[in-house]
Image 1 (cartoon, helix red, strand yellow):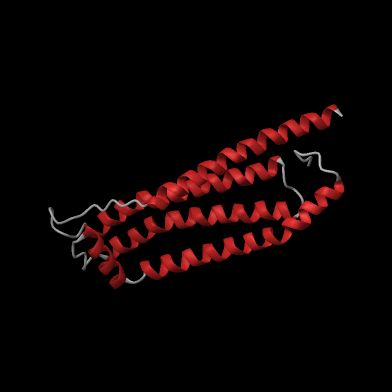
Image 2: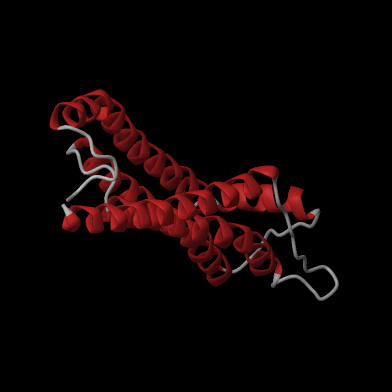
Length: 188
């Protein structure tokens, strides 16, 4: 695939060599992060006492005694953002594998960058939506008037949304630049 910058072979090889270790580190760090999130999420959601304690403190309501179906449904809702995060990390792996092999400023790299942004944004937005959904699910067994809807957002939520939108915009720039490079290659 052509590159956006007309790098001579020597400079392209040098760039690939210089980022190789960083690419490998990023791939491994992404996998470690995904595994960390999965372990933390599952270890929390399989522990009914931890759920009761955490949601009780957050909602200021004793949610003890929720039914197994409530617990299972809340687990599924809470795992949707985790699955989307894993898809984003898989795109990170593919992108940095491409970078390691010298496929840097191309349409294929732009597609992976866009997927990171799309999956990452979807993970963040579903995580934000899952908070009130799980709070409702875990308090449905309580009498009316005691049931709770917990809405929580953090500054990191906005930061993550902005970063994912930035990656999607950068992917668009990569894509257009790759198209221009292809057109220029056809002229020469």
